[in-house]
Image (cartoon, rainbow, N blue to C red):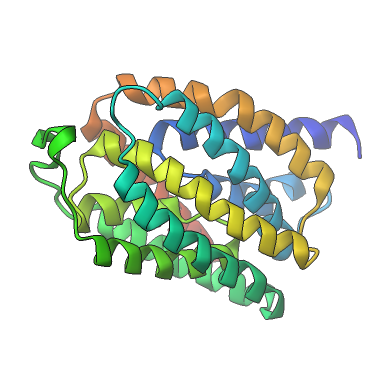
Length: 258
């Protein structure tokens, strides 16, 4: 393992984690394709889809800790929402993470591509008036929230992503949660989801530990910086950036699958 490899893995982790903290996602929507495609461009060994999903799962665990810590003040964390969706996605992600060992690399990539397309479509659905709701008056359907989180957990556990790139549009479009509360709460839910996915990946031997440690260090530095930036950016801009990000990733994944 040479210095070029360490620098590239660190930069992938830093960029993905900064965006993670800013947009309320675990960052795997960025880091999964970057880990898959960037190292070979520099003549470095390519990771398999199983290795990428394992590294992503572990890294997301630490990236979300930094983001939640940065959002801990200001009333952005909805504890009821986090409790219902967090418990459901934790259970679902463990099932997906453990079960992924019997899937082919092509199968993992297809699941990821399908999730990305669904998330991209949802992000472009108009979201009117959600940011006019006072944070202390936010209400949502608890059964629907828990059910959707469980389904997302299974899919996200398979690909090693904590599922926030799909949780965010669900919270915005279906549950009608204000943007900044969505970003902060989804980071906390993603943290819980990543526990299940990480345990599932580690127990089935799908984690490369040295690249994971490099990514973790980058995450702990970059995620809080991204969260601080996200607090200052207009919510409409945050929504557009996330929508374009998910769309670009979905296109890239399907181009390689097809």
